Length: 199
Image (cartoon, rainbow, N blue to C red; front, side, top):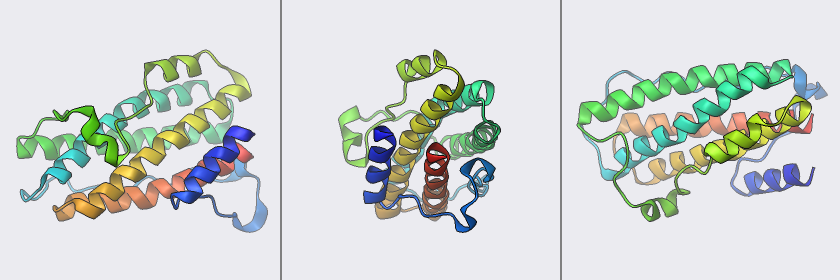
């Protein structure tokens, strides 16, 4: 319980805190939050280093997320948690294809060549790794569901930080639009995840 309250406080300070749900229905009855709208398949050539870094870091963010979500789809005991994992896995796969296509069309590498310290001001590189995934895989039942949701909350918060970096310093209008959709959709997802943990 203490971990949930700490997460809620951190997210609230960042503008991502949970809001009360109208009607007071149990969290388990709420549908999964919608994924971001599909991005266009092509991107304008105009860009700056922030646009490139944002896309590269989103790819790095999506890689462990895909593994986490696949684990959630297979091991979660709650139907709403499995549904959420499936919805987000589909969205992550689609966005990964789009971002990969954009970077390749620019002739930019898919992985950032900057030193890890260069990302510190933008929330750092993803912290969710093999160790966390392995530890989650060793849990089961209701413990798994709670641990999965908490890991996903922390991971999704990183996407909000990346989106705000792009909104502040990016140049390409399509990349900035992707960042805006990511910010809005991910904050809604975090609120839903917090309600699911509390429920």
